[in-house]
Length: 160
Ligand code: MG
Image (cartoon, rainbow, N blue to C red; front, side, top):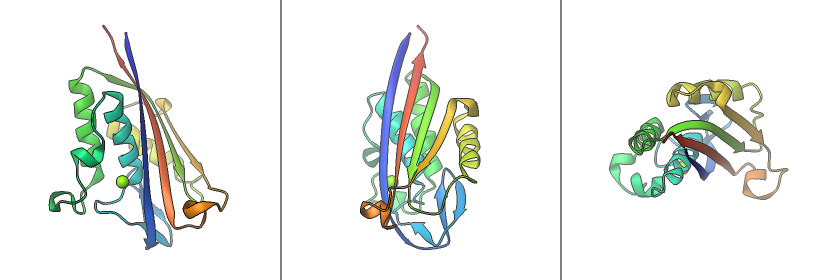
């Protein structure tokens, strides 16, 4: 059996807005994620983790944020493309961990929705997915509410 681990990370600036887009779920907020694409930081970190597990280049290489084609892009397209590459390489997703770091709002009422959304997008049982949230204890840009971070870890399996 071939087992792979992938890691993904992303950070975005926060600007004034009405909601945060996290794993396709709109979380009411006084901020929004500033980005060239739709700014779905969860999908960016997960896509990056998937690409890393199969030794592929990062999402910035696959989808540069300097071209018109990716402006306002639905980040689900990034994820679907990464999943396609994973399947093409003969791997299946075994489990996924997502940790979102932001000062506010609290995500406790949204983590389950984000998990279900990822389960749906990835065609993966939700029991194989964990969505966690942390604050940054008011430290640094994230702690000051100026930025949001997301980390993701994925395990892939290929049966021989
Ligand atoms: Mg990003």
